[in-house]
Amino acid sequence: MVLRECEPLTRDGRQAMYGDSEVMRRRAAELRAQGADLRTLADRLVASTEGAGRTGRVAAALDERLRIRAGRLREAAGRHDDAAEALTAHRREVDRLKEAIADTERRATQLLAQTDATGPTPPPGHRDWLTLDLPGL
Image (cartoon, rainbow, N blue to C red; front, side):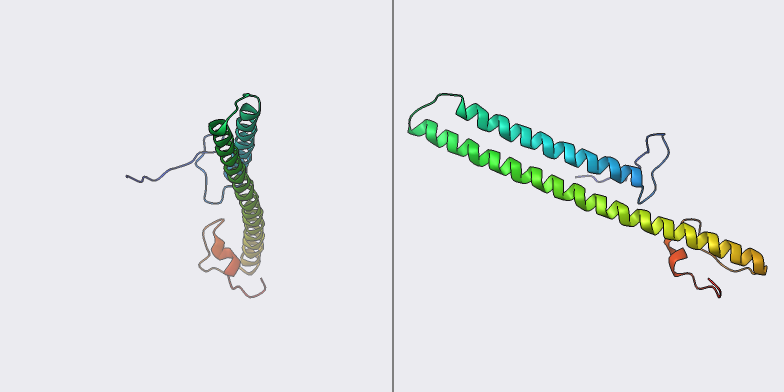
């Protein structure tokens, strides 16, 4: 199996950055939609067994297997929902950290401009802004 780097794009064609909220929002929506599709499939599967009018031991065994399969589909749908919720929680945390980074970067930039101080600073938007140690920050 060959693995390759992917460069996901946002809707407007820009390259997505790590922690891109829009990408995570879309993926969570996709996971929820897939979960709904799995539930629909499970419901159709059960409905097909109930309306078939089959009788006998073989029919009963088949119906039971289809009900088990439908249960597994519903379990998978639940896992999709759980994954969507986890991704949404992660996105919220990423958004919170990005806001904290932007706030710290803005305050540090203002502080450095007021004091005419210079020094190494992290690149714009980098998480190292969260651990930057500047007097007065």
